[in-house]
Image 1: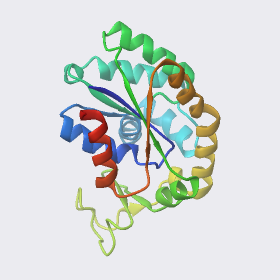
Image 2: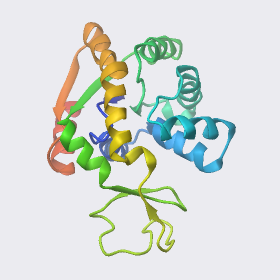
Image 3: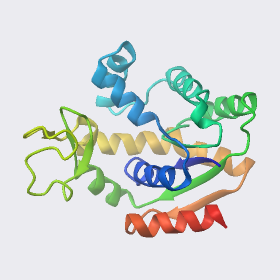
Length: 214
């Protein structure tokens, strides 16, 4: 099974992708996670990506396409994968189609998660990251907690620049201008399954599994 989870920043793609990855036993490929690791490692890619992400800008197509190509060539993608955060431009979508054809992985199921922009701003603004391990939590998850549940670091939570309200609004504007056309591109080529992203994580996951496994 080869899935592409589509939707605006903060709509819940990452959360659902992780759950589906576990239940379907296929890898979750998050360009956001790959880039954040590169930023943490301060690699050449990470330094370039950090500057762009802090401004709310998209990372250039050639960088993202190279990352995805390397990842899809790994053996754990032989039985399927879940793409989260890619493609973000129509050019990336066209390049992805070519890449999937090259790898004989043309069948792609598109899931579109939707939510109100005000809800997205609220969700992203309530996220905090650990400055030591980089893991992201909601305020509810770390309420009354002084140590990171992932790495046990003390007082390490902070609001990332790309989760600040002014950057969120810019990210949503970039999404509308650059990424929404990707959805239209796919609608012309194949069926797109749209799911309301509002509701509990388990409710949304149950809806997704019923559709995918029927």
